[in-house]
Length: 104
Image (cartoon, rainbow, N blue to C red; front, side, top):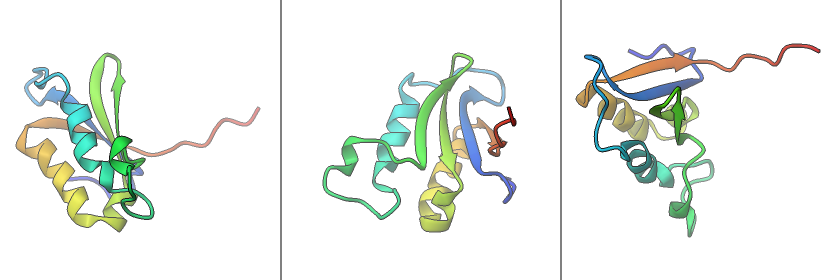
């Protein structure tokens, strides 16, 4: 279960039993499917870039998809889709929130 206070969810390419999830481009594929879900809705050509709400990345050498909480508010079925993808594939999900920059 994802806490409602988290600002972002990281779907990691590691299963709960520690195996690397395959195929190796799963994060880019998932983010590509989600590319139409964006602030203001889909626009012509928006499929050519990732949605700011669902971005593939790598952390410590592990492929991840960062899913922003705003997706849930604007597109609840898309939010459910990505979380069910993680659940169905036994992927680890980590919650995060933005921390303010330290004062200089």
